[in-house]
Structure formats: structure tokens, C-alpha cells
Image (cartoon, rainbow, N blue to C red; front, side, top):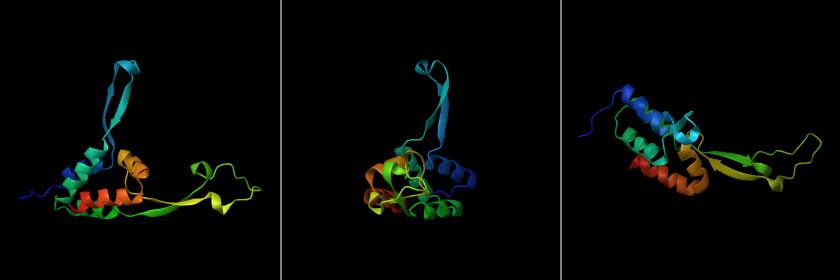
Length: 129
């Protein structure tokens, strides 16, 4: 039987699902300067799966927002740079790109690499089971 998680446990899982800072530590190759280490994609997906079974309203709201997509226009150089007020804009230089604005961290970068259909499939599997 799945145990209902309290809000504090859910918030902790949401931090993992968002790919926030996991820990901060120094290494020999950073000359002792502390660097941030973030949750990886697998840890994020596992947290999403745990939220699915949490039976918590905050978790349900978070999971409802995750698969929302947004279509953006991507231009030359990825952001339309190089166009001044007097420079004509060629519409053929821009393409539509679907993004998941509520997915964060390393998982967001992985989704950008994989593309829309693979990202939707992975996210649907994690949320629905």
C-alpha cells in the first residue's frame, strides 16, 4: 500500500524533480572552490514517479503542470540576434519549436535534445505509470 506523503516530503521531491542543487562541495580540480552539483535526469524522473504515487494535492497540481507545452519561434542563432530596427526579417529563417516551460534542470536540456515526441512519451510514462 502506498503511504500518503506530507507537504514537506512532497516539497523535497519537487526540488529533486525540478533539478535543483543536490549538494555543494569542493574538489581538487576546482582548487578547493565549492561547486554546485545538480540532480540528474534519472533522479528527476524517479522523483516525478514518486510524486505520482504520493496521494498529495500539491503533488497532483505539480504533475498537472509538467506536460504543458508551449510553441516558440526560434530564429538565427537561436534568439533572433543580429536584427536591428532597420534590418528586414526573413520569416523563413524562423522555425517553430515546442518546449515544456515547466520542466527544469537537466531534464529540460535532455528534452530539448530528444525532441517533442520523445519528451512527451518519457514524461507521460513517468506521470501515468
